[in-house]
Length: 213
Length: 257
Picture 1 (cartoon, helix red, strand yellow):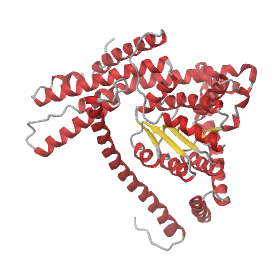
Picture 2 (cartoon, each protein chain N blue to C red; picture 1 turned 45 degrees about the vertical axis):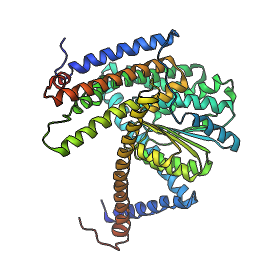
Picture 3 (cartoon, one colour; picture 1 turned 135 degrees about the vertical axis):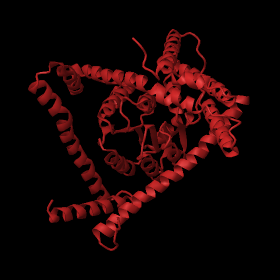
Picture 4 (cartoon, rainbow over the protein chains, first blue to last red; picture 1 turned 90 degrees about the vertical axis):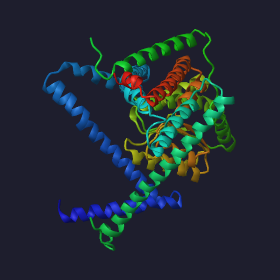
């Protein structure tokens, strides 16, 4: 790519970064300009992406090019979605939605049970004594008790009173501790994102600092 | 036909679970007795938030997350959206629904429209208030930020599958002075909602809320079956842990089959 174009790109990136950051002073024309440009650009990009990722390979290459007629079915289902703009037959668009929903539900049911339930239950089978290491034993107790009490917290057919209320409370406290750790971890990641942007503005754009890779 | 190695236990557990779901849904549909679902904390706040918008003459903002229709959280969000739209129609309060996914946008529009019809106010439905912003996560977040600042909703309902945009939405909602109710099952995002929102539905409470609010037999029945599935999980964990502690890998091996 010619250097001039790279420079123009860098200037645009920097200017739009600053325009978007101005939202800290509430809504203003600069932010509005950046917002609408961003959203508009992606709307156009999505149209182009849809054509190159779905329409061209499926309609032009598979259906017309190779004559694979079974592609007509998903194309018709997709086109039905647009009937919502024609009032007398708008109800037909619901068939596309039902089709997508049915496929989605079936897909989730078939793939989620093992990794998200059975494997996780199995991973909780930890020895509560006899590990030979007090730290491992303590960690195992926290792991097992935390998992069981958090599960009890999410039982909606049992009233949270008495013993069950107490167990739920322990589960809630366990989750809050975990959320606190996750919060701190993500805040650190966000700070590094911010630093990355500052490095770009002060280094790549203004050349005020040198960036060592 | 043979079940693939490593999936035998999962297959039979899921088969029993699905049978329980079907039994519970059938019982709920026939009006037969099923265990009661207890109210999730934060649901009363939903009506309170809509009431606040009505009093202030400001709209309600609803975001169903950025998941697609294959995401159970999005489906739960749709049930809650239906309830919220009905309440908004009842009290003549504007509802702004912003979407990232095109299919979810179509579903949202159909659900909100249906809710207005069911509330007996089809003419009050404003199609321009159900909006598709952008397919890109951060372009969507930027658009929602602008809407929050310009249209100043008095309630910000963030219910569904959220990722890195969660804190942006919650922050901007707080800056706009909205009462905020959020809920997601994406564990990495729950801390942000807990910290920045007035009420937070944690994980599965989102699904329970959708069943509780809609009173839909399918949702109620499946929630009861899910509860029993979780109880099964608790029993397995306790038994498995005790067996492993006394040196028996029986249950661990059984689950790996």
